[in-house]
Length: 309
Image (cartoon, helix red, strand yellow):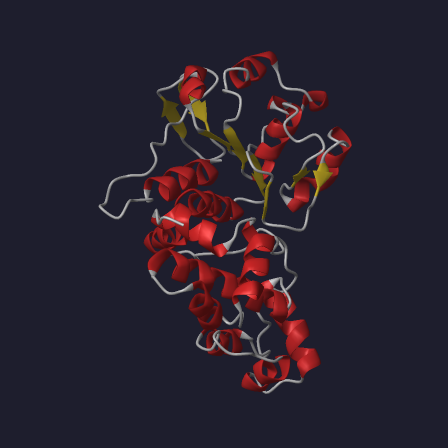
């Protein structure tokens, strides 16, 4: 699927250091080097065989419509199994769309939380009952094993990995270069019944824009609903339909992103970062940041700014 293959190159190759140096080298390999068919009306020429996997720090497996290539009785075919055996222990492995079938067939997802395209859920569950499949999210992160849903969510997953490696500033710059939203949380729904409001129905976009300019102060549901002249009940329902999160979940997500940006790009004290991001106190910021990414504000700043704690 050329979109999935191309987005990996586009997103990771756009990641640059503050001096403009590329942060990743992206290499495509196949079980056998040479021509590879796509589901479009063209083929691609792949220069590298599976030996490239020996030096990879991250391996990304895109999806395919050729189900018999990777899903025969839930096991990898011999050539693909031999290729996977070349991946070094501890290497980060990720999948896009039905690439999750390959990871599951390789045994990498047993007992782990994972996702796949919503249309492939039943087939996946039949083949891999030992995987904790969550069909309602954009992507999952289990440390060195990550999965994403349909094609476009592969962009979200790649941005998430860049954010994890190099911080929000680099990931946001990549998002700007590729003209995509800088952050859609992995827990956001992958299949929203009404992603665009029906004609004649109001959106909640104005309330979201209004809130983003006021993250440093408490914001109530009634205030948000008032921006759209809706009742709280109607606003909450419409918000969930459009965004895939409740207003409170979305606000928390945006405040975490604001805090991460301030920790990376400013010398503000932890107390001031907490206040500017709308968490009120450093204690509240610490709790939310640990829940979201597993580290304290100081540890996060040390990681991405090289400061001495």
